[in-house]
Image 1: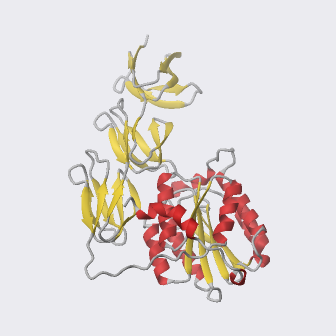
Image 2 (image 1 turned 180 degrees about the vertical axis):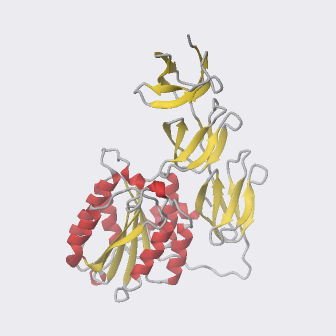
Image 3 (image 1 turned 90 degrees about the horizontal axis):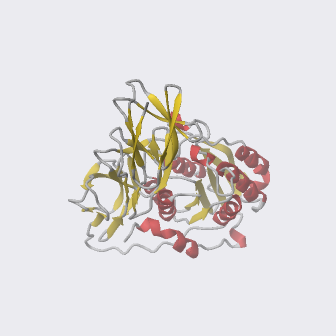
Amino acid sequence: MILRCFLGGVLLLAASLPLSAAEKSGKSVALIIDASGSMQARLKNGVKRIDAAKEAVETLINNTPSDIRIALRAYGHQSHRRKKNCKDTQLLTNFKPIGENKAEVITKAKGLKAQGYTPISLVLELAANDLKAEQQVQSRIVTLVSDGKETCEGDPCAVARALAAADASLVIHTIGFAVDIAARYELQCIAKAGRGTYFEADDAEKLAEKLSAAVKTIAIELPKEVKVKEKKPGRLTLKNTSSSRHKVYNSETNKQVGELSAVIPSIVLPAGFYKVKFGNAYWRSIEVVDGETTDIETAIIKLPNASFRGQKIVDWETNEEIGKLSSSGSSMNLLPSSFNLMFGKLAKKIVLKPGEVKIIEAGSVKFKGLPINSRYIFDENGNEVLSVSSTHSSATLPPGKYHLEHNDRKYPFTIPEGTQKVQIQLK
C-alpha cells in the first residue's frame, strides 16, 4: 500500500452523493480560506492566488441556496510569516443562512491579506468546535481551502480522524489550490479521515466550481472495519534510501519510535499516524495500517559542485531552512515538495517528485587576486548574489551571466550549462 490516505481523492469523489432537495436546508458549512504567505504567489494566468480565492468565494456565495448556513474562517491573514504565528486564525462571520450574511461574507473575504503561516491542525479543531452549536442541522461540513501543507505542530490527518470519530455528523472536505505533491498528499489524507472528499483547482473559476461541489457533497460511507481476533502490526518502509538517517515519530504522542535509513529501511509499527523527519522538515500524515506495508518514497537532491560554505535548502512558503548541501555532503533525501535552493541571495526553485533523483546544474567559479576584504558578485540584473574574498575565493552559482566588482572595475563572467568550473584572474 502506498500511503492509503494519498490515494483517496479520485475514488472519494466518485463515491460522493449529492444531497436531495429535502436535505438542502439542513446543512451548516464552516468555510476556511487560506490567507498564508504562499497565497501571494501568482497562478499561471498571472492572478495572485489570494485574489482568485476571493473571487471564488464571491461566486460561491452568489450561487448557493440562501437557506444553507455558512460561516467564514481564515488563517494566516493577521501576522507576517516572519513572526511564525501558529495561532493566526479568526472566525470572520458567524453561522447564518446565506440569504442573511451574503454581503458580510463577501466583504470579509475581500479584506483578507495573505501573509502568515498555515496552522491546519489548529484550524480544523476550531472549525469543528464552531460547528458544535449547529445542532439543528442534519449535516455539519468543514470545507478547507489550502495551497500548502501544515507549517506548524500537529498532524492534521490525525486531527481530522479524531474529530470525525467524535462527531458522526461532521464531514471534512479539502480543496487543494495550486498545490505541490506534499500538500496534495496531506489534504487527501485529511479528507479521507474526515469522511469527506478531496477536490483540486488551479484558478478562480475551478476553485468556485469545487467550492460549490463541496457544499453539495455529503459524507462518504466508509466500509466497516472487519474485526479480527488478533491484529498484526503494520510496516513502514522508506523506498529510496541514502546515507542519511530519518527519525520516525508517533503523530499523537510526538515520541520517536524508530529510524529509517539504508541500514534499516523498514520498521514494524502499530496502526496509527506517523511523521518522518527529512532534514528539518516533517513528512506528516503517514498512515500505518494493521497487517499492511506503507511505502514512502522521497526524492534525492544532488549538487555536485556544492561549495565549502554550502547552499541552503529553504521551504518555499516559510523560508525556514530545511537543510544544506556542501562539499562535505552534496546530497540529501527530501519529501516530495517545492523548495528554494539558495546561492547566496539568489533563489532557485526546485520541485521534487517521489522517487526522483534531481541533479542540480551549477558551476564553480574561483577568483585569483582577491583582497582579504569582501567583493560582491552580481547577477545580470544588478542584484547582489554573494560575496567572495581571499579567504573564500570560490563560489557555486547556477548557469547565467554575472559580474564581480573590484577596484572600480567590473569583471563579467558566465556560468555555462552543466557542472563546469570557471577560473578568473583579477588584475
